Structures are given as C-alpha cells and as structure tokens.
Image 1 (cartoon, rainbow over the protein chains, first blue to last red):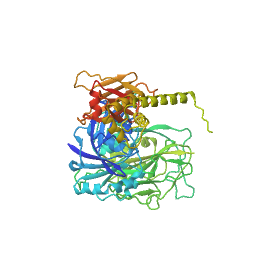
Image 2 (image 1 turned 180 degrees about the vertical axis):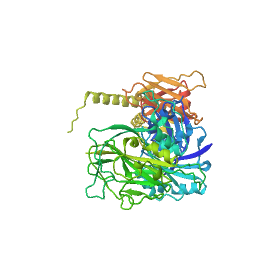
Image 3 (image 1 turned 120 degrees about the horizontal axis):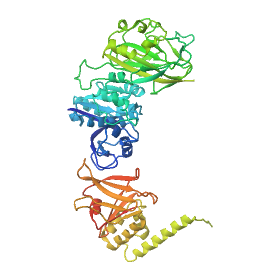
Image 4 (image 1 turned 90 degrees about the horizontal axis):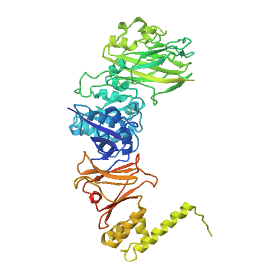
Length: 417
Length: 177
C-alpha cells in the first residue's frame, strides 16, 4: 500500500486532506476536521464533484452515492487552487494499493496548488510565494521526519514563481500541465468507466497515464502556416514560404508534458526520469501577433540533448533546434532556465507573419545525442521544411531512436494578425 | 411634513406587520418575562441581532411566553411541517408539506452526525434561512440554514442535538422561515 499525504497549499499554511467518504446525501460537502463545520467553499466542491458541472463523478463514477464528504485539517478560503489536491486525493482513494494518510504515516507528502478545468488541464493560481512562506515550518517537519516531499504546481509561470520562492532544499518540484501529469508521476491509474456523449471513451482516459502512452495516443490537427525571418536579425531558423492553399494533416503531438519522476523511488536513485518543461511565461496558451518575436524558456531536470521543431499553422514543420545558425550543439544542463532566443544558446530570432492560426513548438530531450541516429533531414542542417513523410512522424522517429529515455513537451500558441 | 406613498404591496405588508405586532401584544398581556413584544416578534422572525440571551432565558422560564413565541414563529413561517413520519421509532423521520420536505440521513463518515436535508419544491414564498422546531411543551430549538443550492439545503447536525431530538418527536412541529 502506498500511503500519500495530500496537502492543499494555502496562504495560511498547508491543509491536509484527511479523508474522503462517499455519502448518501444530495450534496457533497467539505468539512473542517471531521466536525460538523462546513467550509464556505463546500458549494464549490459540490460543483467540482457533480456530473455536468464537475469532474469527480465523471472521472471516477458512477457511484451508488454520488456525493462525498471531504474532511480537511484547516480552513480553505475562496478560490479554486484546492482543485489539484482534491482531484489527486480522489484519484488516490479510487486506486487500489493507494491510500490517503497523515504525513506521519506517509511514504510521500504532497503539497499541491492548481486549478483543474473541465478538460482536466491544470491552470495557474496566485500567491505561490506566500503559500511557500506559510508552509516553511511544515516542510521542515516533514523533511525532518524523513518524508519525501513534493511541491506540485501548474507548469509555466507558477513553476517559475516556485523556483524563485526559496523552496527548502530537498523539496522536489513537479510542474504539471494536465491532471494526467500529476497522476502519472504518482503511478496512479484509474479505469475508464464512463463514456463521453458520443459513446467514445474520452481521450484523457484512453490515453493511459504514461507520458509515452499519451504521445502515442494523442493527435492534434496542425494547420500549415508560415514563419518568417526577422529582417536584419541573425536569421530565421527556417525562412520558409508557405504553399498557397493550406494543407491540413494530422500530426502526432505529445500532450502537455510533465516533470516526471518516480516519486516512490528511494532517495539518491538514478531512476528519476528525464523531464522537460517549455514555458512562454504567464499565459498557458499565449497569443502572438504578426511582427512579434517567439520567446520561450525551457528547463530540464537532468542534463540532456535537445531537438525542437516548429509546427506552423500552414502545416509545415521546420527544425527549430539545432539549425544551421547554431554553431555548436551541446548538452543542456539540468535545472537551468534557458531562454530562447539568447546569444549563447539560441542565436536566432523568429518573427511571426501571416497566415494566422495555431502553431506549436515541440521539443524532445534525450540523455544521449541522437543526431547520428536521426534521418539526415532531422539533423539540423537545413532551414527548409521537413518532407511531409518525416513531418507527420517526428514523435515516432524519436521514440524509435531514443526509446523511453526521452522527454517531450510542447508549447502551443495562437498567431493572430 | 414628510409624506410617503405606499404601494399596494407595501401597504399590505405593513398592515400584516401591525396585525402581528398587535397579536404579539395581546399574547403577551399576561406574561412577558421582561421581554417586549416587539423584541420577541423580531426574535421569532429571525431579525433580531445582538444579545438574545435574555430572551432565551425568559422563554426557558415562562410557559406562556413560549406559547406566544411559538405562535409568532408559526406566523412567520414560510413552511409549516406538522408531524414526523417514520417507519419505526428507530428510523429517521421525514416531514413533508406542500412544496417542502425535511429529512435526516445518516453520515457514513461520522456515526454521531446526520445530514439535515431541506428540499424546496416551491421557492415562490422565498427562501428559508432558519429551521425552528417546537416541542409539545412549546420549547423551541432552531438552526440557521445556508442558502439553497438547486433547491436543496443541506447541513450537518449532531445526532444527539436538541434539534434532532425534537425532529424525531412526532408531537413536535417544524417551521421554516
């Protein structure tokens, strides 16, 4: 039995989710310390549980009762940052071999904050630094008792805020873009028991919870587009002219990535899986206008080699990194936030140009340099679009040459006039 | 001189209020226990803020005052649920009237607690904020209710609380106001 203590991070300190009990009552309730005191956010919790408005019964039900009583150790104020912890707690209670417990008895201690939307994406929240500050004593207590402690936050800006919040040494960070990321990191799975309205099992349940299963299962429609070089800039990665008449195809894309780690591994283990996080700042789904420059950051949890591709709205795919403007290919170091562009690492700038549409950067990180194992057209020697036969198969090619020692993340954004 | 014109609805509400006040005064002619009719009336309507200990103490001592108070509570009620229905003495009672149902359900998480559930089928009268239950001796216990969600009000009560004891008493009368 894996015992997990789940805490909701609040500005008043961490609040332990003590237990979840199915109840024969019409409404779910969040209660304080097993008492009859009902928290003001109880109605929000009921909405989060109910089918239609919420996700708990949809994901874990149907239940005979369809309502829950969730007991917490302290007050949780307004807002929805409790949703990531509460969803995870429900997943723990729903999975054989896992149980909620107090931190004293836990194999791992989770400190979680993040909103969960109807599509199970994890969204950014406020007050990360204040929540860390309010939890310092508890972090010390948990670590002093030899517990493995994980801070789980939405990827992107919250992750950056957490890195800058002075988290105590030894507290691991999991930055997640979707609920699957958190559950996969905990090895939590739950069986698809309900189907969508169209009779198909929803994608987030089909896909399983391993990142690579997600990569294999997920498809995104990419509309071909154009990426133009900045005049006078060091040069574009790919000064490509889009073909008239947009070509649409289905390209396998990874779903939002995660800093994956075997959270139950012993300390000092080498089993920690490689992870990669791409971020474009505060917005999870940034929007760029024509004339703007592409800027993003990337971070690895282990030293790794990198290959990045740009999926244009006109359907073409160009290799973003490495490319002919990169004089030296090297291994990126762990736990450093690399900025693109930058003179040292990404000596090129990219400017957005018509047509408009959804575009994406997808990066693959590998512990070995895969250059020699990749097809010639994917070795960064050209700024031309990849031949379609390769463009639609990038993920499979990387998995073929990189195996499972591979991390993937994507950054999707809109390009508008 | 200041004049104020009442709408027909305001006039009717004001007249009803004065009628109740008159009735309260009449009820309290031979009692009172140091509690004015207006204060007791406000207390019965759930409109009295601040210290109510003297009223509760007076109600505890004075049977006539309790009878008057019960009448006021009844007058102010949106729903009156006269008697409990239970299949057996051990079963949890259900009270039902037109447009409203009050029931108790056990908590699986805490054996000492019950869910008090108010189901509102008719919200045209307004939404109740208090449940008051009067026993045969006119002793009344009440609890504040949260706003309804989807026509349902749900609160947790202790199984051995006075409100539960009274709700289980078939001779008691429950009022939602």
